Image 1 (cartoon, chains in turn purple, orange):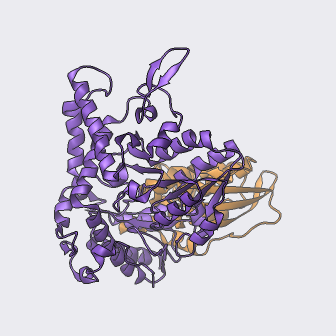
Image 2 (image 1 turned 90 degrees about the vertical axis):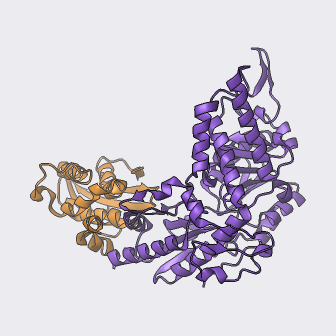
Image 3 (image 1 turned 60 degrees about the horizontal axis):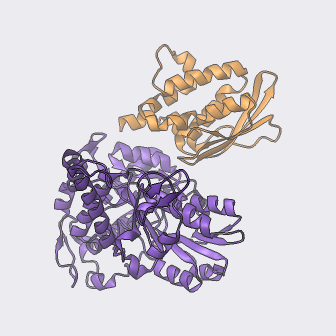
Length: 442
Length: 149
């Protein structure tokens, strides 16, 4: 029996019990004091044009949302409108279109600030994605503040993008990378983490949720312990923002990075939140236009926050598209999405456990709707090919988390990751597809 | 299902379940790793040579059915062949799995014909060719990790 427990948002979920497990997923009503609207899955699905197209002649069953999510028409339309009506460079010309583009670009920054509940709009830096946000902190804050003998703490379940930038920094500075271990279920060993903390630990960098196992890390406790130790905390929020409400002030983290494309927005755009005092003290990272006030060959004066960290013409269409995506998920409600996806997770977990020879990798106490699994006698890559013939998109491989695969002694896993538009019928299709895999390999 | 049966032919399923020459080799002249980081296919190949002739080939490791069956079939196919013959078999095999089988006869292909379905699955070509790329590098004497990424 897998140990999937109801999330801590018990206020909303306390009265739900298993009522929704037996209801058709097309219309699930969540009763609570906070959420009294129905979750209109048909309307939501109709917002995503790509879900109407077939794959390999079958209905597309898209279960690779941890890799990237599909885009609603609202986001697509917003990008089209930008290029049709508003395109210009930002922060430059005095002409009309430049003003229009700059206004939408900066309005988007305010949207992100509100979405994350950041204290000040200056704390929102636009990046290419989570990876760039983490590299920015490693290269700017890290190179200025980490010295020989210092320590950076990450966890055993990090994505490569929250491992390699710190390895590079540690190698350059002669610092040490330390790893919070994980138990067999996929929960971080917090007692060991707290024992690791010492005055040499300058930064703790952990994921909000694991892309490979689905584990939602107890980041409040991780942040509190780090701060009590005088260490800063960066949260890799790539898998957090799509699945739950994030309030950076309430969390108290120092940095929070996420990607647009994993939260139903465009690729190539992301956000780094950083506390103003920290960002202010950090040296610029990349040099170029937009990040300067004045340049002479003798001396360059850097621009104020957040422009200091936005060298070059930014991904303006991406930024306005991201704002449209955040508006889209906010209009459904992040708590609403989290509750819906959690029901899906419970359902698909139960269905997968009925399959002989299938083992779920990652059964943490709190999980996002991500299920990694292995099937006895069948390599995940073969599973992926056979499911693909059924129109079912899953990820197979190491999920950019090779140390994690080593930890669980598997070369790779299959991974089904659910988003706000997936249904129990699609979970059923996955199960049927896996039975086909077993049939081919029996 | 027909494309799938084409890909996962009985020969492939059999070699996957019971790979031939699947062991280490203490007196190998060459030992080369083949690695496909995207899928996690990871094998070590052992080759014993007698002058220009491949006396023995074996392998260990793990990976998907296509890569493992390909390694198994390859190991039994190239045993006793000269380096040049092995190279020419690789070229034949490569044409087969990339869909350029024109002019290849059943006699050219032999057991390799079981991999004809791979050409319909472009994402799996690198699985099928991993063993062959690794063998080539072993025969050329490069003792490095070979990757098909």
